[in-house]
Image 1 (tube, rainbow, N blue to C red):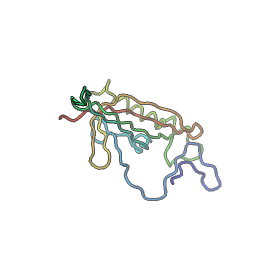
Image 2 (tube, rainbow, N blue to C red; image 1 turned 180 degrees about the vertical axis):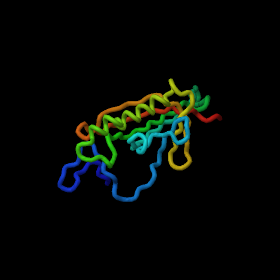
Image 3 (spheres, one colour; image 1 turned 90 degrees about the vertical axis):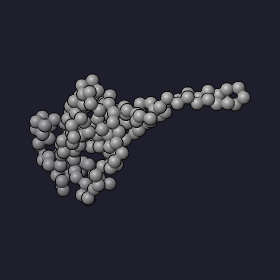
Length: 173
């Protein structure tokens, strides 16, 4: 299990320092990218990681149960789906040294600020192109970015959680 906040030997670690996982990892299974190729939420550009994906998809239909137990089914296609992308944003990366946390946050900003700027750029009221959510290697969804919720997870470690909601566009029948 990774340790996100740890001490450096006997010296205490700076608050909000992210400690790297010491073992090889695999690429995340989920990516969200904007209208420009490669413009997605990520550690190197936003000091943010994706930790959770939730999806909900449903059909648009009407079922009528008649006298005599006949059932009529009217199918109208699929409804808009919902994909929620949740993650964590950190204050600084692994390279932070004692005493430089506030300088780093003042000059670069917190990861949640960068993730929020990404949301502002690609939300449906600003960008008329869909965002792309990729799950695994090839399962992709096109959708519109409609909301972002933010809350503090650990104030002493400057750890913030976010959730972005994408409404997916149904495939044509």
